[in-house]
Length: 404
Image (cartoon, rainbow, N blue to C red):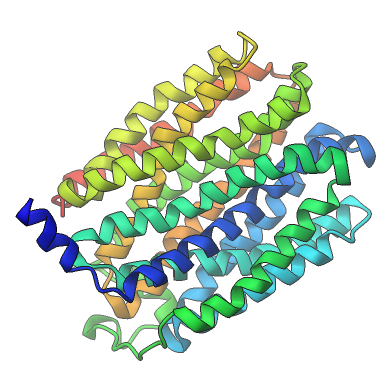
């Protein structure tokens, strides 16, 4: 009891508002990332789009996010987290309003790509802000909590979209996704601390910041992390993008299909909270390896549940969310604790950039497989492959680095 009290006393009072703002911005980011998946079944009917063509729409923002994640690193290391985060929020909020005004697939894809550039710049800065302002004994947990904002936002997007789209149309959810980030700019400037200049480590001073993660002390560890990030996000984005559409094509009601797609976020939230606390004790690497190994079986469970009807797919997707997406939330803490502060923005940017690359491939591969007329359960089962590859990379990473 006394030990618990002492731990609570070590949390600076000013850190909690910073964490809250970071989580809320992450929720807005997560809402935006998943919003197209919720409106896709309606767009397919209204615009006469073939299901296989939706893969390009799903991937447009993800391509932008991949580039934004990588390019923001040197900017945030030079100009500061708060400045780049504020520009990111301003950008994706404004672009959502532009997207709501589009009337054809090509215009929406272009708007979503530009939106993705700003979305991609937000994630690494949020993780870095949480890392740099967290008490040392809660650092992994705080990073996981911040990253949990992304799936929470996605789930809330599903809850909002299910009743809002039938009542007010698909454009309404984009308008909400545009106005709320713009309002959040006030809190970003009021609560987040002013940025301080960082000194780059000696071994990286002669290299451009963008490429410092390729230097000898970091390259193998970085590549293994990138495989983890890419494999996890490929599977997650496949489910996020395709579950509502595939279940709708199997005869599930639209609201059931949307809520089932959103349930991965509830599983992710529970997994992130539980696994994140364990990561503070055991280190992120062993927790990620365990979670992804269990995630392989969870992906196969979705394939079986899809044949059973009712709410079984929702339960199975939530379980997959617990292990795959929840493990992915803990994975966010790994580069944040490995890279020194002066290159943290760049290191996180590359890691999340590789996650975005996997995220791009998820919807595109889904579209390719859909065009091959594979059954829906087979499509769900295939998602276990990237999770297995990510689990292997996590195990190799664990063997290279002691838990910390």
